[in-house]
Image (tube, rainbow, N blue to C red):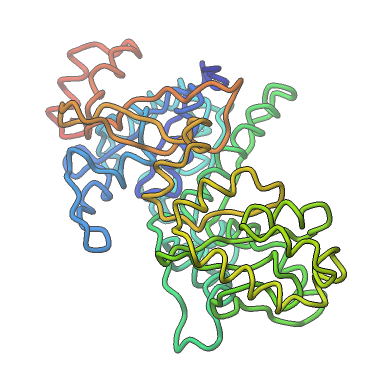
Length: 409
């Protein structure tokens, strides 16, 4: 694995998933990410042990592992002068300072831009927030359910107007993980800029800006036309215009999504795959124009054919179809998806409980040189405090004094 961030040190003062996910990506890429946690409580997310009715084992805490794999944890009480002294020692050696604490907290505990830059003028200061670091709500906190899902227009757009209320965000840390990747990309660009110019930048990514970017094509369309577009109610069968575009139900209630936007060149191959080769010779379906004009009749044939066999059959059988399609999979299905596995999208790490059963985590979306991501489990709270401080050359007497003052763990 090419460690493109090897030699880069990131000092992360952050909790939950949004900004720590950026640190996790950078750790995957080879950076030395030092995660600062409260010496008693640790990252608040360590205590989130019930997610959607599923109870998590604190030694196999998947919600915490996802954004924190590969890091080292140092326990510091940054609300104390002694703790701030320790933080500044670490900041002297860091390339990047990464935080999602609110401005008023950064000021109160003396780790805002001016405090960290006074210690290290060349450090890149990266902030993640709910709504951005400017404007009347810069001091307002939020989660991806509020800033990414609800306020951004995503929930509204994803919810069919026939439903009595908006859809909930059904995936934990959905916007957090997307936004964390944006932060990691921004940090990469900032490091390149510093390398070229010697200038260290301050960069911002918010959950709101992440959602707006992800929805940018539709937002631009709304701005241009004034027409709001919402997700239609789910349906079965082909689209009114194109029967090779739509959701088709299998015999065991699975769903196959056809998305062959341009059927030209695929019609015979498709009807061969569904066991209806003569349909491609029917003048009603022989070319794209005729197929569109007779979409309903073609859809009826496809509904019957796909409905005659189970999901797993089509999941395998359609792999040789020349057009575009996808099985509508659950995450359980995805864990056995041979294409995802062939591209190393799932990684395994040793769990903190010491068992022989590894944790399965998702690698970041970027792969270098085709090599699998190599990472380690997330650290236990304050696991590396003494080791990291000794690497900095701090004398043991000083470490003991900080411990006695409650500044470190």
